[in-house]
Image (cartoon, rainbow, N blue to C red):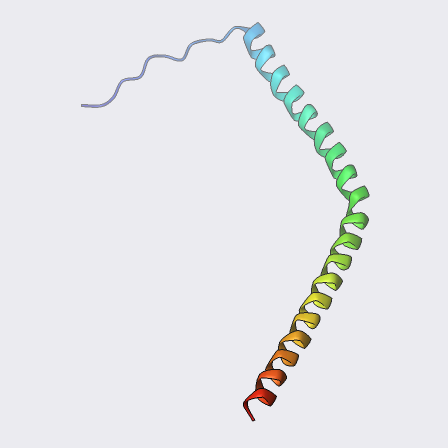
Length: 82
């Protein structure tokens, strides 16, 4: 048995205008805030890159120091066993 749909309802022009108005207002609102966030992130990008470079250098230095301590400990253990 085929499905029978009701005829389409004619939507009020006021409701149609309101829907389109809210849709366009939402798009404009989103574009405005996206632009603001993008400008902010670009302004902070250099600071973040500098902090990342400093953090990476500190971590590399800490790893190097830990490796040097480990080698010293191994040398002590090797001398003590002989």
